[in-house]
Image (cartoon, rainbow over all chains, first blue to last red; front, top):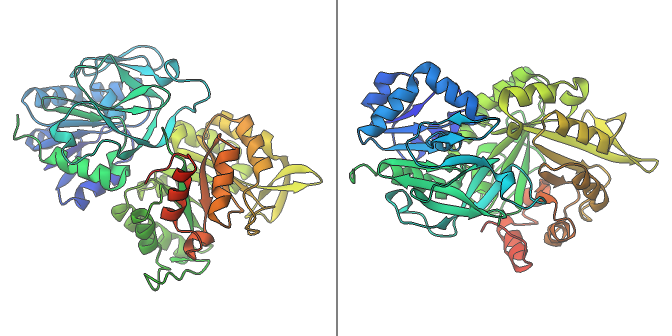
Length: 206
Length: 252
């Protein structure tokens, strides 16, 4: 069973539906016991980093996520959930993340030409940098759907795939049992569903 | 490179797609769920569902259809029509919409865009405008284009984006239905006024109209159309292949 963590951030309908579409049982939950019982954990999220990090702390779910990841359970952060895996973010001030991956979150405005719109909203191609169990069904150049104004930097250690938007932006990360996607696999058609399927098949390696 | 998006728009009334649909391959595809699935499998980058129902029964049928669609289609889904309050945002977001489009609702209550953006994030709020030239000035029309609000269009768009609209759908009433191409003059003005994504609507009659649009106005992010896709006059996969041949980034 996949636990999709509900900490009051964003809409989880599509995420749950996408697991159903690939035949995986998924439960939207804020119950630590369910998360501990799950085979895999998804950390979703939309909105601002500071608010989301605060909500995770308030609910105590930050500790549960760290513990489960520490025990080797496959964990995947999606969009803001992916950003939360890193050490810190500079979105409206400076905020501490879960620190499961090395790196930090910076505005894409610092790195891309002024004529490009922010957020990056739409379909962009993946450039695979490093092979990973998460990408076993993904081809270089396949398109996924992004909506973001911030991205992970200084994360060479875990970088799996990037995307070109006036600069090379971090698209996909993974190190050991911890994975993350800046884009929305649940909104990226067949390519996204294949990636969720690959995530559901990880774990044996750990 | 980020790709230019192609977006079919489905007008839904009493649970069926209106504007008559008759694909040879699918037979009756007036079912919004089937049509959405068809488009998703055949190159659409995003879908817009527009609820043109007036009755309460129709409305609840619409949310059922939306839920069913979001269960089977995994590309971004924008919902519009009858969005007047943040409660309406809530209703359609819970059924699986990713973005919500406001038009007349924002005109009636100009604080709606700001309130919704705070609650759900800018990326979730789409401003949709119906624009028509009146004595040489672009004016905003309300109620499905029936009522001239007298508001100057570019100023209205700029204001709503300032309040938090994360995307703008610009429908030109002057070119809509004429099938002679998009309203480049209007779209250029909007692109010059705002930095959020701009979606062009109204006027597409053939593949070349999209090519002209994207070549002439690099600031336009997406093209939206309804009947030319529903009637199969333009097949999205053919359109995208032609975009690619013309050096316009497209997801194929």
